[in-house]
Length: 320
Image (spheres, rainbow, N blue to C red):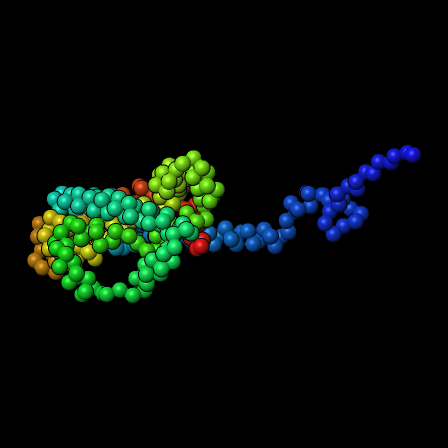
């Protein structure tokens, strides 16, 4: 008996019986494909310009002569550079008090937020935790229904938080939205097999959370930190309603006071030998400088967290 070897037929291209598959055919692009790509890139360029140019205009306007700005002669580069607005802002002692307060509120508040949100999100992500759906429902309920400003004011008054630094930190200890995003991240990104292996090695929930989960969650930790920090840094309403002492006001409220004081000088009696037009231009320059002063720390912080931002948001946004 003779044995015969069967050679498998060579692979063919999909949908073809005679012509072998040629990968180079996929690289050919029609004119319509190039047109679509050009249109997409033009739209992206327009969106980038629409976002970046207003920021750049504020930067160059803050160091330009305001007469040139009001005449529309400042477009891409500053004209007749003048740093009087920044000199006025930084020579005001209130600006440094506001920076000190805002840095403390942002750092302490973000630390408390992370200390509460991340462990709570991990606990709610565990399927063996039976009350998790009830707790999550009660937390989600507060996103749609709240007592309002007056009940909150009365509650803070009874708790002794009015005109206190703790009013910036304690009431917003957890954000339900951030809690849901972090919970979804833990459910979708941390394999359950890691918990099984940790149990075999004798680790409890605390050891598993501290030694395994946290080191693997750098993306969501960076995103949550950025969210909370930006929220505390831009907090304007709390200082406006609940704070009376000027030495406890955050930066946003201090900058508002500076702007209002300069607007008052415009409508009132002129000072420093300047007429009304000069005071108006000087106030506009201070306004641009105030915007840069308040946003510069966040603009510096964001590039260091950007590499974690997209990953953490995309993974954590998948609701489980």
